[in-house]
Image (cartoon, rainbow, N blue to C red; front, side, top):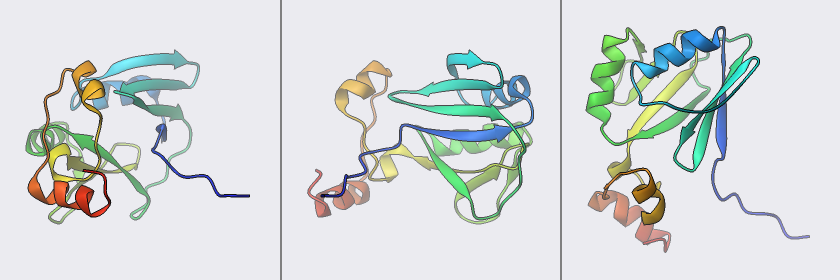
Length: 143
């Protein structure tokens, strides 16, 4: 039997001690569109994907992380600093949220991750790609 192909990430789930506090904290940095709310969980739309915040134990881990794509990394950095995020030293934009989740932030135009024009339009975004990101896509036959 042939193996199936990975085609994307539907969602990422983060464990947080308090859903309301997590929504408030992340809402200071990112525009949040609440998709759904259930006991012990909240789901935030990210275009055609979503982020799940789930009540549960959290443990700070230096290596385990996930990456978010933003339209403006430096504006995100400033908002993270204003929110008191624990920044990870280095040239990248990594931070720990108050529950110990490590998050890496990258800017859309600098990476190969791509959304279709229809999805971007539906999100009211007009974003391009840097030449280095386009080269990554070309090397894979994706641009």
